[in-house]
Length: 169
Image 1 (cartoon, rainbow, N blue to C red):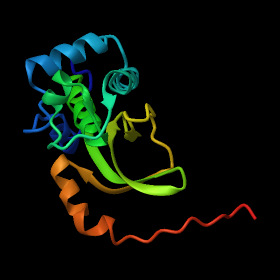
Image 2 (cartoon, rainbow, N blue to C red):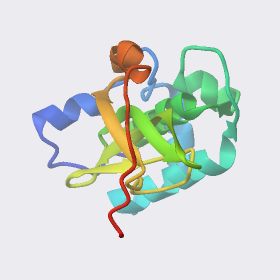
Image 3 (cartoon, rainbow, N blue to C red):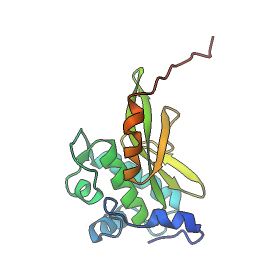
């Protein structure tokens, strides 16, 4: 299914399966093949996958380590489950994908959030919880990589002090 013959060596690592992003599992590959077509461009594949995860994974908090295969079989979870499932499906479809985590600004406040970066000639953000590609400027990335990078945020999230400055005056 991969159509990306010109992926750099750096990008190829983000096609690989990992313990929590099981992009090589037969069920993940089967679903990716049902969601996208071989004839779709990578951008069309990415949009279809973001939309599919947005529409098919129930948005609710869960207390678990995010795992793409488990999220596929029990389609519910918060931003972390959405991000690992989108990463697995996109990688199975031949699109290098990373997870990003940081803050998102919603309803006047900042919240912890995770989303994805997909390589479509350049890295493009996508948020399957919100069904957006690219993710908008309300997303502030603090880390990018595999899900384990999110541990780097533990000491930072509670310490950040951000202020919204209105420049329209």
